[in-house]
Image (cartoon, rainbow over all chains, first blue to last red):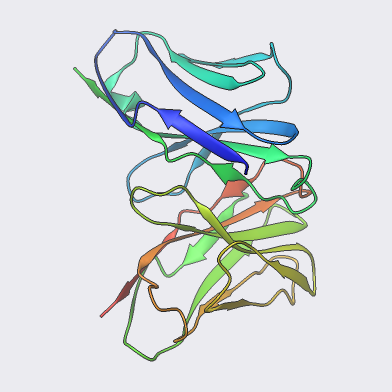
Length: 113
Length: 112
């Protein structure tokens, strides 16, 4: 069964304290891995798509990387406004014709000033 | 601005009532989706549509119905058959099923 697991469930950082969020996946044929940011009471906001092992993408203080078994979202020198829930999702070749994404449960990040 | 608009933001349903959540997009996307989000659980797919006048059941379609009469619109009806409808509902769209999926702001449904 296709599965996506995110860790940790919750992460508290001091402003400027860099860290990484993990997304491990067990799927039959990865087509793409997606990272979203979700603020409380709002819809997920798209951040990155990764398609192949070794691929990296960056946006401001965020950097996403992909291996054959997991993805990391690195947060460098975070600010309080980076506080949110970060969602990881995968699309597989088996489901790519449907557009179905398999989501992890998310990591809730809190950055204290 | 292009985007996905969901309405209403908050909706209350009485027992035995059907309610309809609206979703409109002006991104010219062909594919549209409805996901449900519950606390402590990942998003789960309710229904999806790849093209006008066609839609398919997702993983948790029981108690829900949809229509896709226009490319821009994909309303979701939560019927009285849905036993646990209280949740956060998210509409999404993509240019094609394998492209990046973008989400609306969500609708909260509460049973009273």
